[in-house]
Length: 183
Image 1 (tube, rainbow, N blue to C red):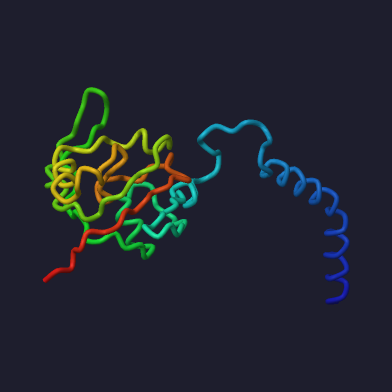
Image 2 (tube, rainbow, N blue to C red):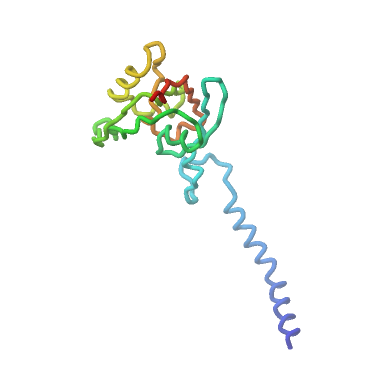
């Protein structure tokens, strides 16, 4: 009796095998990536990899290190998570955020509080071009902590630079640190 039931199940699955194979092929074709030019939005659900960019850090000795950074976090946070020492953070959040050409939202943060986390951003990167320009207190902290010959147009404080999705492949140079551990 058990063998006759198994025999019937085997016959049914063998009869439906061509239809199942055709259905699997059509599903695989639908799931296969298109060779056409895709838009910036995928049809599938968002992935973590849509929010991660790779940033190359060059330390004062010239050693290069590629680190992952999440979109939305600061450059200092990305370096801190990945073990890159930038010194003490300019811990204050941004004072304001430019939302459009006509609206700047006040965030009531204290802004940069020190100038220890000085970095140089790669010029010509699309992500660097859309980063908010440095606020007045960030410029003041750079001038207070660094000499004039050490400040460049690409100079920023890492705690004030927010990572965006266009920064993938960006190069960041970390200059020699100021002595910050004197008691």
